[in-house]
Amino acid sequence: MANTPSAKKAARKIERRTEVNRSRRSRVRTYLRKLEDAIAAGDATQAQAAFQAAEPELMRAVTKGVIHKNTASRKVSRLAARVRKLSA
Picture 1 (cartoon, rainbow, N blue to C red):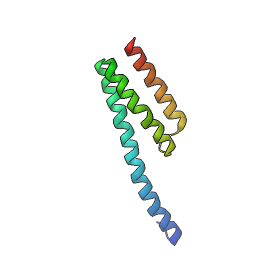
Picture 2 (cartoon, rainbow, N blue to C red; picture 1 turned 60 degrees about the horizontal axis):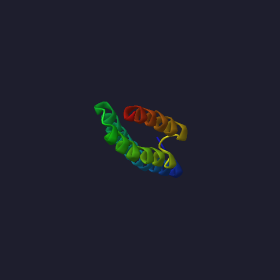
Picture 3 (spheres, rainbow, N blue to C red; picture 1 turned 90 degrees about the horizontal axis):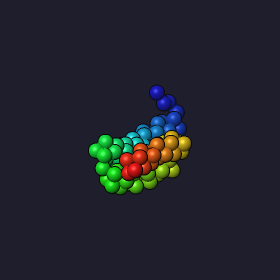
């Protein structure tokens, strides 16, 4: 348990930050789920549209520090390949 005033403040800040990050992470997962559903359905146009929406959301999560840059890049790359394969 935090004892010093600065440690108590840090604990409060972490709590607020965690809530914001949880919201952002959830938002990214929602976009990814929509993309996964479109790929599973085999709908190339819907998958392409979902990918167009999901990619900026992933990169925004990177700038906000929610996920690592390489993780987002890897996900985008793999999803793009799956969407491209669906279109072909």
